[in-house]
Image (cartoon, rainbow, N blue to C red; front, side, top):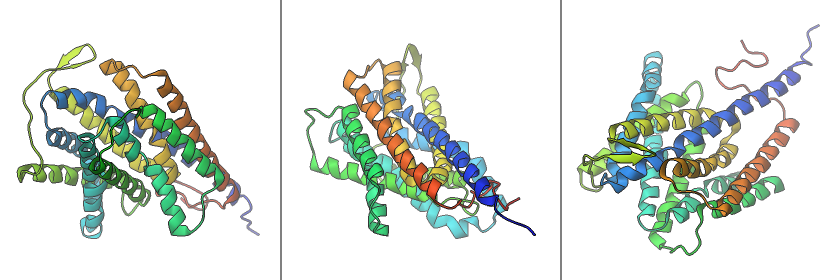
Length: 333
């Protein structure tokens, strides 16, 4: 007689392993994304237009990840016919839309306010799931959301900032686009490989930004200049290649992390990008954070820990989940 009593135990061990790898991927993604701002800032201040920086950033990232897209196209001949809408949506909304709306907000308000509003995305996701399922989030998740948002307010330092209604609208749209990033990434799998989605979306986002520039909606300028990064004087080529490669890593690790840990936890872990950006601005640009920002960083981490604790509790009381595509779990080979 064959029994299956050991299967749940195997699954319960497997699940934390998958989620632990997902957390590592999510933190690494936030770290990679955070490098772009401090390095791109001297380019923008030196006369490069936003469209030029974004086009190179997304284009290089899309090309770095393109082998995954090419491999998928070869292995699945009907991939574009089946998933063209997902690729276009990912390129227009999470990739191009999020960046264009965020930087449009920056032109009308301080960086701190724009960051604060854009990073409302984790709270938006909690409210979205609440509205969709009509199941209120746990007190732990609500507490984590409040603690993380208070920490974010302290980190971005919004004291005395002016408020612009149109800027707020742009920042809210950027937050909505960020929500799409997490939700769409969560739905990747064997049929829609995450790296193929990221590469296709980045290339479509690049084409979108260049198209808007060609028709005159966005200015396009890339004057020759030398920029100072740390103690090094560089031409724009090296910083842009670094930004592009870091963006590729950010999207690659991000879209692989979300299916493992879920969109809600991934969005809270993404708040670490703000902390890493402060660190790189300090190291590369000499912009030292204030003491209150360290307190805010600790609160953000506390909020993430609370949300993570709720995810762990939910996993402990639930049945083993189906392994991710390519992962070996109970009953699979």
